[in-house]
Image (tube, rainbow, N blue to C red; front, side, top):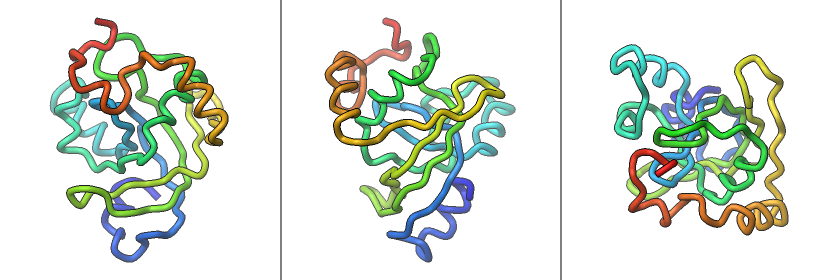
Length: 155
């Protein structure tokens, strides 16, 4: 399923495990899975995707931001811009309703395409891997620490 389909069918599939694909990104310190088609449409209109585009894109909020630390270990981070993560992803997880009626997903499995056309890399989501990566990358602007970060994460 894609992100838009999940949001449309949420009332029927809440608390179920789903498989979903989309663009995984870190915006304002929080992980989201964005709908492929909406991101492409946004790029055609504005010529570049940025954190303000998020309001117009179907999205699932990932309810464990600490996964971003593990992702940092597994991918080639993007340089500059609003996020060092903007990668095609496949995820399975359990859906729930978050704050302000957002749809959230608790990932059970995650695979990320590091470069276009490459095989998807399976990301380990166990507690030990997450804790280790978090200790290693504790200065990354993830979660509440990102509130005062400028638009360019290299600043």
